Length: 171
Image (cartoon, rainbow, N blue to C red; front, side, top):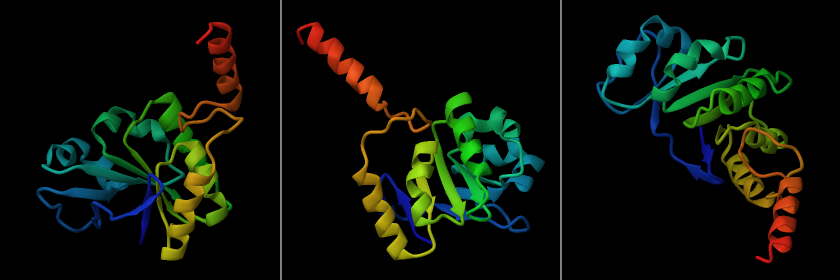
């Protein structure tokens, strides 16, 4: 499936590995939360980067001890009506300061793309190439927002305040 990262269609550097399959010695892998939690330390000692697929019904607090060593956290949208992964994304970005790749997987729809970016996702796994192209265009379309969120962008209010401050300081 195509990935959109940084507003561009990009190849996936992480190989999904089934629970019963052996882990490659090196290279990026994406594994299930159950497999990861069963032996996290051993998995993190392998040569390549590690990513975990985290379902939206699991508490992200279980990931906290490992966040600094995870290259990817893939949060799952099982249906477009289930928004728990938005909350997980915001917790990971805002409370736990996770700076690795935060990937949206599952039912990732065009009309939710901007909301996913605002919640802190930086990578989206989409079903169709045409969706990937539309998502890439959407990411470039909007640059100013009113609400503060996990994506780290400055709000319109803070932008205006900075502008007024620099004008009053004679900058």
